[in-house]
Image (tube, rainbow, N blue to C red):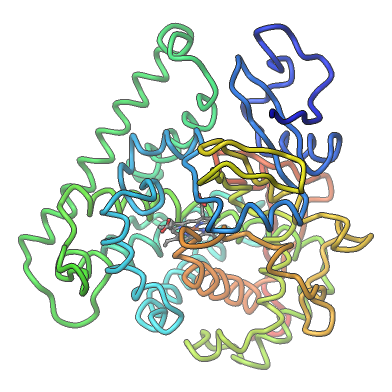
Length: 460
Ligand code: HEM
């Protein structure tokens, strides 16, 4: 028995729904489809079926780890050309996933953030200096500056590398190449190799060069560290990967796998956090009363000194600002799941073992279950008395199950440090002409967002 699902009306023989294909904003298009066709629908592209699921009940079934598992959908699978069997792009059955998870998960607990706190604070301080130097009247390129912050933090914390993005005249080679790689993969995800070899040959060749370049840059970093030998004092993720083995199996990570993990942190852990910071600053600039409330909390918890590790955990309102930002714009806009066995969801939609779906977080996070004001930015919907009882079903910005995001605490901590520091120092002014547009480079970020920062009244 086959599934019969709603689909776009102009379905062509053989070609299917190609007229309805949007390559550069595929996640937002997946969301629009959910609004139009409902909690489960499909697009058929040249015979391949993409099933989009956005209804909370159906997603709860798909998140059941006994029946469904992570699937490497096209853009994620294409990232394997860069990050191989790194944690994010590893197949569930690849032994290196389990080894890396055993070695790295302890380094991503909330308590472990204590070790990374100082580099985060220091980098946030450098952003403040950089913005001050730009002068009060300057329109700041917020998404680009947030990328710089997140990159510098992950570089320092993961492998002790300083890209120095606030002083360099142009972005580091590794950063430029990574951004081109992500853009290429996002665009080419549903393209045909023949099209890439002809129409996009120049871009494809650049893409290949970019991949070997980033790999060799990271190999150099790892080789230099190996030469140094074990370090004393603060250890970073690279030290951990070089020196630790899985306590259960005794296996450690190969040089190639360590490179893959570093590229994974750069791909999975930089654009995501940067996107959240940029979206949050957009909303704070649009809602001065929310910005004032968040600033008030930061000032009462931290005064005008840099936040300490303990204080970050006390910024409860700021946490709600982050959660609400991630609700409206889950920067990883969805995830793929595949059936472990023949199964039926919603009592009526059959899936054969191995068939897969895309979970549309952009639609789930604005589902009617969030209430009639789901489109509104309102951090207090995450306050204890208002938060939905079934939050775990309605809110999945970090994915689900065994393969959910390992960097969640890291992301919350760094974003909190950066937002708190910005709020302590600046008031943000929105460009009155700006309407939010969202760019997709696998992850999401505000496109063309500029803000003006003036010294916050509460400081000095
Ligand atoms: C996995 C989101 C920040 C590292 C994931 C997944 C999501 C996600 C949805 C699951 C993907 C899937 O099912 O295919 C986010 C968001 C972030 C964020 C929204 C920021 C707010 C980070 C950071 C790091 C990181 C800062 C590292 C420093 C990873 C890794 C995985 C992952 C390694 C793969 C985990 C595994 O399969 O074992 N992330 N992420 N992420 N993320 Fe994040």
